[in-house]
Image 1 (cartoon, helix red, strand yellow):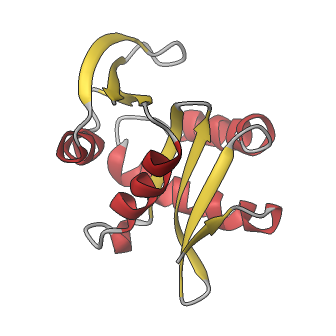
Image 2 (cartoon, one colour):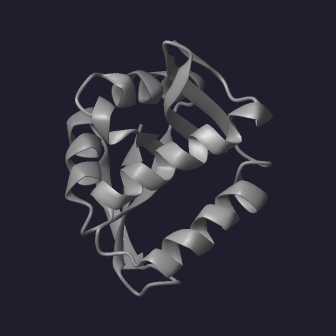
Length: 140
């Protein structure tokens, strides 16, 4: 089931983000992940429109939007390949005519997912905090 995020979901959302980040972003160090976790909780979740995917009462994925920007879409690794990411993206797509996002060039999992969904690369730039290349993708 996909539903609107509730503040009570924060810990579960952060746990999904962390577990999925370890798989999709093995090139990021623990110090960066720790700082990013705090940034997500305090800066981004309060301003984002977030949907969570729930299975048997447990949050297993989420997608956050800020305007047309997909700020995050993460699914717990144990649930990869089950359609949860697509269902979350379908929910976002139904509410926005255009979606845009950045993905690390080194994130092969994310790049495959976005390409299969129909996103196209429209640019690239260095990520401010890490210097790694991020690809700018657009759907719409």
